[in-house]
Length: 69
Image (tube, rainbow, N blue to C red; front, side, top):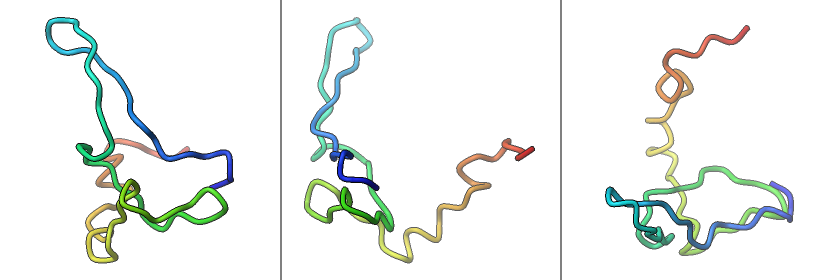
């Protein structure tokens, strides 16, 4: 990860009524795993998966119908 990469601050979306709502890192379910390089940081805003948690995520599980050609 290069140094121009910055952990997300907040992002917006729309609720069922079409109103703008904000999503904040502290409320998210986003995690990082094995990030490396100048842009990689480990802090409260960039939660890390443990080695045991990471084993649950395989490419076939994440992309079950994807066939590399």
